[in-house]
Amino acid sequence: MTIHIERGVVASAEDAEARLREDGFTFFTGPLPKRAMEETHWHEIDVVIAAVEGSFRLKDGSTGEVHIVEAGDWTLTPGGTLHAFAADAPSTVVVGFSEAIAPAALEAFPASELPDAERSSPRVESPEWLGEEKPSG
Image 1 (cartoon, one colour):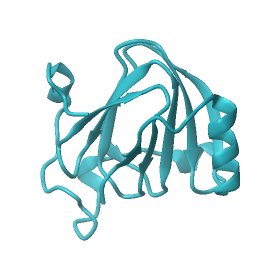
Image 2 (cartoon, rainbow, N blue to C red; image 1 turned 60 degrees about the horizontal axis):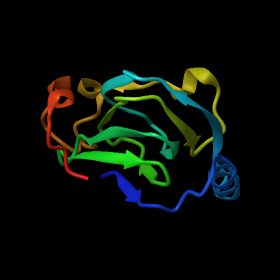
Image 3 (cartoon, rainbow, N blue to C red; image 1 turned 90 degrees about the horizontal axis):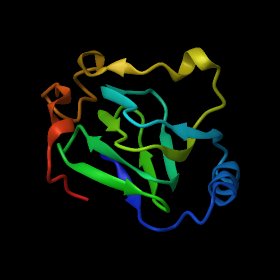
């Protein structure tokens, strides 16, 4: 499994919310503060992040690729996909989930807990990628 990115398809928060609603996702819109970061982890459900303002880095744990996600971009991280993110500046995002979930169901599992049969990458990555100067994207 790998992260999918559509570039320049989100016109506004309302646009992203309408698309998520149409696809049956639950969602919230809010800030991604400067220095927000999640180390490599995975979820049981699909997660969409639509960038409305600003940008952030999203690492695909299956390929090691670091993507720069900018305002207007739409990302889909399938359930079971190792990933991490970091924000260098404040951003506004719409985050969608493939199921109507209670807060406890949004749990992010450490990379080490991904079942071997579903593991996209045999390596458990440390957050050292945050210091990379030349991410792809």
